[in-house]
Length: 382
Image 1: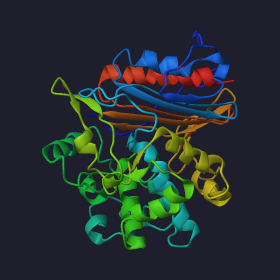
Image 2: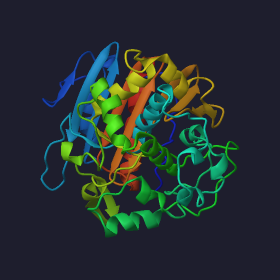
Image 3: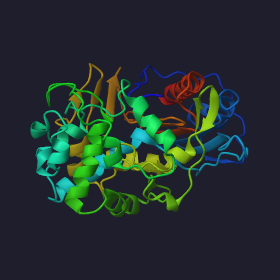
């Protein structure tokens, strides 16, 4: 298995025209004028001829609105993938967690620059190194240094727990147990290390502030106002929908991880969603002033909020920023065994992309899905 660190930057190179001829898409798509006369339906149709069970793709720009699907949502029933199918989106949902924290900060219900001992009990704080000096902001921008419960050195324990008990609900408190009493990566504010534990703690802080699980506020403050009608909080709201199957190789066999992942409700990977809703959420954060506004946007991705990772990449609250060759993109993908999510906004092109693949965790799937996303992004660069 693997750690949920979706930071795999795409090379923002000069635009090229892919050598694909335009042709009619299948009945299971909605699209208008394709970019550069490229048939994106044909691209994803060809992708599922390899090792990808199914793909859903949404591209939104001033010149184009494409939504298409290919392949199957279940390898046993061979049910065709549909454009509005939903699945766990992994760490790409961190943007929703960060957005909710920013809203609570704006409304004066918490201060992201307070230390976490303002809200969390000693039973947790005493088991987290440097807890007395970690701020909520540092959790959200991954500069707190808290041990990642999905660190490759110990993630097997987490996955064993899931496999041994697939049907019970696992929330932030359950997942946090796999990170307690572990060494910090560094002193708070002294580095950047992507840690899923940071967002578990943010979820527990919001629960403390709100007096109930933060999934309620996420629905009332984000899902409903933004019209995310195909989105729900994984695990806690699983009665609101049904996810597609996701495939991973386990003990040399291809296994469906759906039953495991529909029972996980954690703030580091909170969302079950559709590709269109993921585009809507990312666009709302980056460009829509009707609900979120510049104050929230500045808190999430303003210049003073971005933490430098390297010469081209930085991280705000819940979003990566990649810049180079005069271009920029905001993104946050998601990786779960069985499910892979890509969610990108190309700033220069005013284009937002979401792609779902219902496999992950083995080389053939990872390689082909990365190549597919790379080709799509390159085809859209102007």
